[in-house]
Amino acid sequence: MEGDAELQDLYREVLLDYFRSTRHRGRVASPDIESQGINPLCGDEVVLTVSVRGGVVEDCKIDGHGCVISQSSAAMMSEAVKGQTLEEASKLAEGFKRAMLGQSSFDDLPDVLDEARALEGVQKYPARIKCALLSWNTLLLGVRSHKEGKKEVQYQEK
Amino acid sequence: MLKFDVSKIREDFPILGRKIRGKNLVYFDNASTSQKPKAVLEALQRYYAETNANVHRGIHALSQQATDQCEAVRAQTARFLHASGPEQIVFTRNATEAINLVAYAWGRKFLKAGDEILLTGMEHHSNIVPWQILAQEKGSQLKFAPILEDGCLDLEGLKTLLTPRTKLFAFTAMNNAFGTINPVAELLGLAREQGVLTLVDAAQWTPHLRTDVAAWDCDFLVFSAHKMLGPTGLGVLYGKKKLLESMDPFLGGGDMIREVHLSHSTYNEIPYKFEAGTPHIGGIVAFGAALEYLSRLGWEAIDRHERGLTRYAMDALSQEKELRIYGPSQPERRGGILSFNLEGVHAHDVGTILDTEGVAVRAGHHCCQPLMRRFKTSGTVRASFYFYNTVDEVDVMLRAIRKVKEFFKVKVP
Ligand SMILES: Cc1ncc(COP(=O)(O)O)c(C=O)c1O
Image (tube, rainbow over all chains, first blue to last red):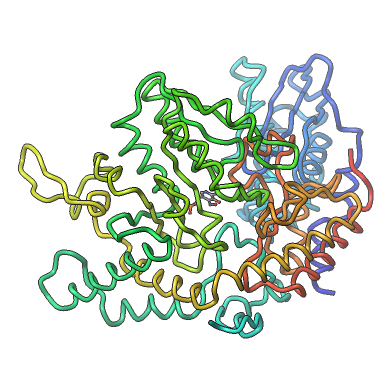
């Protein structure tokens, strides 16, 4: 069944696992970065809290609500950036964005983004690409603001 | 009167034969925009092939023919609304622009600080934002009639908000997110008793139900052609003659003037006073074909078919566990719109899965964020029907909904 294959390609099992998993959910106790991202189009929301020690992401948690794509993408991101320097985390986010927007190949993503490759199927649903990018854009803004000495920021998907 | 044969009717709509991702298209996003029958497409094509010229300005034959065609559709629109004359019909870009026209041309001239405009909690953003802008500029207040748990207007609450300060009551005849049909005549009566002007947002009403502005006795009414078989880029403002005459122009430019001097201008008579620049001539001509198509089908037949479909879909959907339908439970209080959510599954995920089955629905806030907030949801899945939809298509959607449930099985955090 053609539709089913497509469906399975979009909502790959690993996405559903991340979506259901609770290990990334919540807020870190005293965050150095607190970045809230919303997609006004669908009301999806991710609240990213990050603790930073010596320029390295110590912990990163995800709060909020939304569709499978936005929430699983956020969970994967939180896992990928843990232990990375803020610089590296931003680079990962930029790399993921480029792949998602079709400007580079998913195959060229670094190994820490292995799981995030499962979001490749979203490309066939252009209306959903923003869902996949919401948390990454929220992270990028959070890191940028952190550098400027701001702790809390809000990102809105256009 | 045509015999109502859906399969025959569907042949008039080329797009309904399309495949989407290998599946037959099931178009259930009619509240966003309707599909167009061949008659409308051909009218558009014929206009550009045979009579294309600018209107109200050429001395030549083509211009006269184009002008005549436009004015014929204006008269046809007046008859369709049961308006007393074509001068009450102003062509705009869409319903949104028609509302903005009233907010500027009437509101700027007549509204004062301390005045109130009454809206409802179920308005489309188009019938909120223009009034917010106006109210800010004028120092006036907006009030919102409350919405009951079943998605209907709270009439008692509404009555307390109609006061001597209320200058205009603008409300939707049929809500686009849940499909709630408002008691339009009753609402207009309440406003009239208080001497309050009225604007009916009929964007969701005119495609489905007979409209009679004379019986309603509303002051303004707006709708969009594209939701009722017509082309995009064309809307209509109906207004009472005296009111339209008393208003200042909206946009300035060609066609809306009588004489232009370097220091000032005098304005054309209604409706031209409100139609600056070259209008959507081809669209107007094609809209004539849309009106003709609808009148050949007949409102009773359209209503009967859509009601049957809605009832069938309501019955079927209410059997589904973990599915919440929003809006009135009595079928007679709603039009052919079903708004729902599956417990634990985001509306967008439902929408995407339905899309893989060829079922086009809208998922999200439907430009009704205040209503969504009232019902504590960020969005819903909305299936909206038109007369060319079938029970078989509803079954396709039902199967797709079951698939969503199966696919996501568990309830999620
Ligand atoms: C109730 C209602 N009012 C106004 C509008 C605005 O129509 P348009 O976008 O054609 O201006 C819509 C369209 O969705 C609607 O459903």
